[in-house]
Each structure stands twice: as C-alpha cells, then as structure tokens.
Image (cartoon, helix red, strand yellow):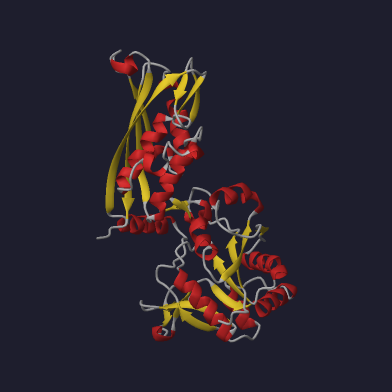
Length: 393
C-alpha cells in the first residue's frame, strides 16, 4: 500500500442483536471476559496502518459504549440509523471530514478479527478499490422453494461466505451509499452488495474462519468454550500483608474507606486487602511481589491509592492473554467489623479488577484476641488468586 494512503474504519455497532437472546445488545455483552465491541474495536485501534476508527452506535447506548471501550483509540461516536445500511452511511459521513483514502467497514458483532485480516483488507482495497474477506463453503448447499422442496444444488466450488471488514476506496463507497439512499434503496445486506449495484467490481481476499459473527445464544456458548479451551494454564497465587495502626480516623480496606478510631501506618494508603490480592496475582504470574513493582523506598508511591496497584496486576494478566477466574481475600482483625461492608468491598474489588462480582470473595475472622491483631495493634490479610493463561512451554 502506498504510504500516502490513509485508512479509516467504520465500526457498525447500532444494532439491537435480538437473535442473541437476553442480556442487552450483543455488542455490549462479554465474551472471554471482555465486551464484544472492545474486542472488535481493539484490533483496529492498535493497527499501525489505521489512523481513525469511527464507531456508529445507538444513541440509547452511549453510556454502555463509553464504559465498554475505555482505553481504546477512536473518534467520537456518531448515531446510527434504522438499518445497518443507514448506520454505515452515517459512519462514512462522519469519517469524511478526515479525508481517508481507504475505508474498512466492520460489524462490531465480529470480535475475533485479526491483524492479518485487517492488513489484507487494506492491501486489497488499495489494489482493487473494492474487496471483501471470504472463506470457502465446505457444506453442500441446497436451493429450496416455498414448500421446502429442493430445487437445485449450486456448485459449492464457486460459493463463498462473506465476512467483514469489507474494504473500499473511500470516495467510491461513499458515493454508492449516497446514491442508494437518494434512490430509496435500503434493502442491501452488506456494503459489497451496494458496490455491485453501483457498478463496481468487488474482489475477494482470504478471510478467517475464526472471524465469525456472533448472532445466536449458541454462538456465545460455543465461542466462550473455545476461548476457555485456549486458557489451559490454570495458576493459583497467594498473598499476605499486614499494617499497624497509627493516628487517624479511617482505614482503607479492599478499596473502601472505613471509618475507624485509628489509621494505618503505611507508605501508601495501607490497604492490606488489596495489597494481599496484588501479591496473590503476581504470585500466580510468577512475576515478583508488590514491593518489587512498587518499592516503598520510592516517594512516588507515598500516600498512593492502592486501587492502582490492583489495576496494574490485572493488566499484567491481560498482557499475557490471560483472565482472572477468582479473587479471594480474608481479613484478620477485631475491629472494624468487616461483615456489614462485605458486599461493598466485593463490588469495589470487582470494579477495579474488571471481573464479575461472582468471582470475588471477601471473608473476615478474628484471632480470638491473640497476637497483634487480637490486641488491635493492626490488621492482617491473606489472599488467593486463580488465573488462566494460554498454555506455553
């Protein structure tokens, strides 16, 4: 592809996804621990040859969209229309001010698009002007009539399953969409069909069988199982932390500010629960301990909020292609009482970690008035973390 050519992306995410069953629009449901739309957008946002990603969303989904794609590079979302075709046109119009040479149009319900497919799409559009990813049909296909009787058997050697991202010279596909809208044509099922109708020759390039569209509840079940099977390296780590009491009027425990007659003596905020969890996660990764990543000798961490330590540990898991399966922390103290705040703490850990609250346990016990915790000189915490990583030798 010529260096002067600029590639933009229209990510179509305005649909309701009713065939996917309960749980809201399918693009905002999770698959493999991440929102579908995050996975779909991430590949484009991180691709070196893509300069702009233009999301098209339903205006009712603004808050969900913002939360789902946090941290990814993209243009401000534009509102979609009543049909996919109208939504694509809205995305193209929004992207027009950036003057792209090439545009890739992708469905947010295809979360497994690879960098290789994106590169092939860009190359194909630069060479041909209009191209789609396609995979061969392996089953025999039958044509049936209204009564359900077989009327023909097409040659499967010539049949292909069309995927996205479909790629085009930007000016020609924008003109084709504008012309279709002007003439009242709203029945096209993909952008290649509009290009064909407008007289363009549409080429094909190698697609990817993994780049499937999530449509039904069964699709979600199957893909969850496939992703889980890839994470066969199951690891458990443990953590322990303790902090003494000093002057103060509150303590931080598991990310929650708890009123108390004392405070923690600590370099950071002294959150023993989160510190123990961080050590447990790093232990499961065989990646040192909290002190090696956040040394107390570094003034940078003086008074630091411990939620950033936990987020960091979770990011270390994600960077390895892994997922957190379970987090458990046990507080050892006489006071303050943990029980009334247990679910609040679970919710806060889940929020920081990006995992479902059902995977977070907070427990509490006393030391029967024995030792420093029994004398209320401080608080101790133990923790465990179970993570799943891709298996590697």
